[in-house]
Image 1: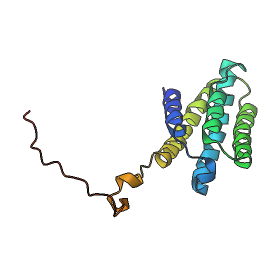
Image 2: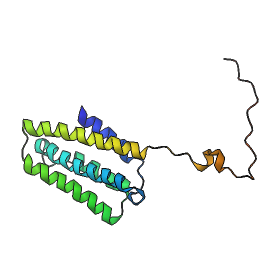
Image 3: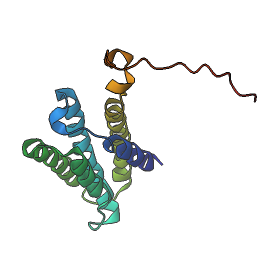
Image 4: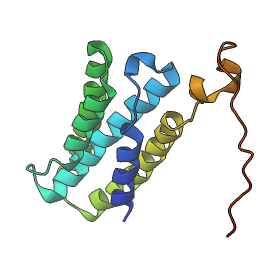
Amino acid sequence: MRLAALFTIVALAIAPMAAAQERAPAERQVLLDLAYTLGEAHALRQACEGEGDQYWRDRMARLIEVEAADEGFNGQLQSRFNAGYNNRTAEFPSCTPESKKALVGTAAKGQGLAGRLAAITHTVHPKPQDDPAAQSADAPPAQADTQPDAPR
């Protein structure tokens, strides 16, 4: 199901996040767009599951927790989530075939945003100790393994 895939991607995207203060403006915009989409998903899911359903709100709370944003950006994330929620609640106040179709579309949009965010946050940069150029001139050179391979 697309919603399960979206949750998986959101979880992967937010797990290793850097603090929002360290993010480039384009990365921050992806986070804001994702917050809006999570708000939309929350409203659409609640239309069918009831107001007690907090599935997407809980995911948004986790995003905010892991992102550890400064107060200003945290407020922007919350505002975007609420705007997405309010817009979809006004558009789909009850569960209908149209609201279910809208939820599928919102899930696809969220999946794309989460994928973009995951690509940004999962970029692997070599650690200084892994970079031969970063080794100290005082450090002895690494010894090559001169032992033959063991028979297989």
